[in-house]
Structure formats: structure tokens, C-alpha cells
Length: 350
Image 1: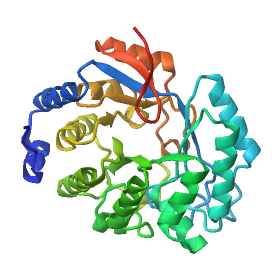
Image 2: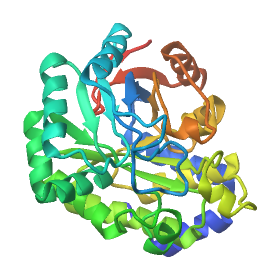
Image 3: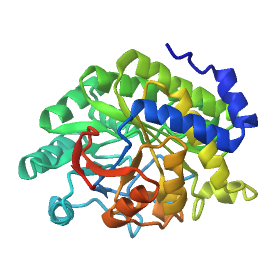
């Protein structure tokens, strides 16, 4: 049986390991988990149903307040139009999330999920971060469990890991003081897993966290995965600072390097020995570092990203079509495949 990486060992790898050796170790672990050499991606669309949010995260350039001129809540017809466009290119999933709207209650979300699920039965709804779920419960005066149960009954399939940022309350108190605490984020995912709703785990690094905070974050994810087995994948990206209040507050903040991204990605692959899939964040890193990530433990290129509004608001402007994803995967000798939300292979490109 493989000996688990300890927090101390993981920290040592971040500080001292040779980058090439880290890549080799992470690739070896990836091959053990995915011996067929298949690298996957999903054809989906991010639909941000509203940009209205009261949480005011300092690292976010997407949110607006209710009275702002460019604040919006999409109509069901506008959402349908976006899904119709996704179906035209063979899409199977919508990543559905918005700002934390101060007034929308559980009935609005039930109507929305039911509408999509009934009209578009082939589309998987991967939606609503733990922060949204927590606030829906509060504003509706019901429990988190009831929110999850009611949305699942209407057609919600899984929830994204958004809102994790760094699972350290001292970091969260600086970059997103109104957001739920780390333990609450973990507990909402625990409750979802217990109800049979799978999820993903994420990490946004590159603000004010320490390396120790990063390892603690990975450990919280690994511990919950030991308990529930409910995380399908781990996705990590670097802070995108353009147009954000946090960058104005800490003007000398250095942009994380590609070297740093690959180093942390490899350590994540080695530490998260119970999470089956690691996703490359080409959206923030660009297609070629996104491709390099496949040599540092990632086995999934994420989404073709037909639409993305949140990190693009903060300066990340990369886009990639299906053919380019297939080319990048083949270029390093791996086999490209389209997957669904459950990481089941739908189509292999020989």
C-alpha cells in the first residue's frame, strides 16, 4: 500500500523539490490512476444567471450591486437561448452559478432548475456554489439540507467547488470577509455528498495565503474525501487581479508564475491521493501551460468554455475550441476524449 504524503512532506516539496522531478512523480501517480493515457474535457457553458451579489469579495471583478446600471438577472428565455446554442455544438453540461443575490429565494431556484431539467433533459445541471446554497437557506429560512434536497428533486445533478478560495479563515477574513467560513464550506459539501450530490473541489491561490495555508486546504479536501468520496475532481487556479479591489489594496502583489502553478499542481496530485481527477486551468494559465499541466498530474483539460464571465472580468481572456483541445492532448502523446459531468467517456478521438 502506498504511503500517504504528510503535510510536512508536501510543504517540503513546495519549498525544495526539483520541478522536473515533481512533474515525474505527479505523472507517475496520474498514470497509476489513469493507465489508459486518456485525457478528457467537457463541452459545456458557464451561465451566470445574475451578477448581483452582496458578498463584495475583494478578488472579484464580476459582481454588481442591485442598483448598478449593468446589474442583471437573466430571464428564463435568455437562459434557454444560451442552452440552445450549447446544444448546437454538442454540449452536455451547464456550469450554473451567479452572484449571491440578496432577494432570490428557494422557490425561484426550484422553478429555474425544474424549467431547465424538463426542457433540456440531456443537459446536466452542475450548479450553485456552497456560498449560494448557504444564503438561499438563510433568505428562505430553511436548512441547507432542505435546499439541497429540493434542488436535487427538481434536477440539480452536482455542485461546483467555487467559493473555496483558500480554506483558511485568516485568509478569507482578508479577501472575502462576508463569505462563509472554511468549516461551513466543507460541511455543505459533506451534506451534498450524503444526499448523493457529487461535487468538485477548487483552490484559488496567489493572494495573501502562505504555503502552510495551501497544504491545510489540500488536507481539508483530502479528509472530507476520505469521509464521503464525493469529490469527482480538484481544480486549481491563480488569482486574476485586474479590476479587483484586492489588487488596489495590495498593489505590490506579484502575479504567480507558471512555475509556481505547475509546482502546486503536482503537489496537489500527489497529496490528493483519493481524488480521481485533477483539472488543468488553461483558462487562467493559457493553452500551453494548460497543456504542460498534463505533464504535472492533470488528466483533464476542463471545459471548452463556450462562455465565461467571472475570471475574464479580472483579466483572463483565453479561449479554446474542441479541435484545439484535441490537438494539444494528441501533441503530448495522450488520447483525447469528451466526457460528461460524471467523468464518463462519451467520445474518444483516435
